[in-house]
Image 1 (cartoon, one colour):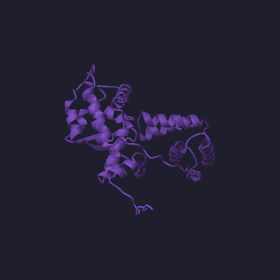
Image 2 (image 1 turned 60 degrees about the vertical axis):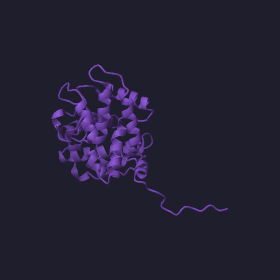
Image 3 (image 1 turned 90 degrees about the horizontal axis):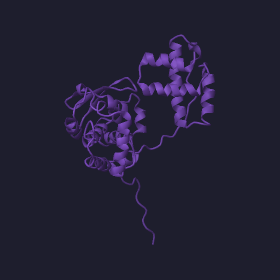
Image 4 (image 1 turned 180 degrees about the horizontal axis):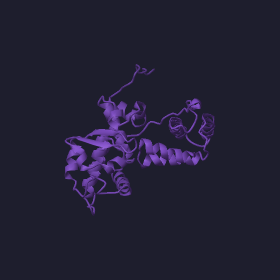
Length: 271
């Protein structure tokens, strides 16, 4: 059985959104062979390090390990040969997040936007920024949230990437902005704007505010400020793996917001 066919069976079993399917399809393009023997996969991973980034190869290792375990559980390969694949070392880059000051610049820029056809661009972009920061949701999940999923200050979603239920908290600004949005259907954002349009509007907003970044930065900002508040960002992000938050927390912003100073005595000036 080819990797793509096995991946389709695995996704059908565990669930997963379009993004998850896309990741496995991309993996299948790199490994067209049908063999899932660990030795074969180790050779692929070693070779891939010459042309792909360590992070990409690490992701491939993780997905291949899951496929191999799934194939063994389904009786599609000999369980006795299953073992952990070779380790892949990677150095995660420090993610960049927006500070509160930068997010306020976005909100100020949103206040100056021109009216839209379905909805005021001002109301839409203020709500998008506020809700994306407050909930820490991914772009696809933000577009799919519905009015009936909001109860008080809490929002219950099923994350498309993981298929897991996740409860988010809406702060005062997010609640205020949502209340100002018109209803055009069941979905809060998805019935007002599509994915390509919201990405375009975010590019225009960041340019107007003279702030570099994309809507992903709001998810990172929420994670970083969750840690500033002394909370675990994994819960805010809806991650099952605690270590994943490393890829979202801006450690420089975290140190700045926590007021961390020098850890050694400063050198005295020698005259």
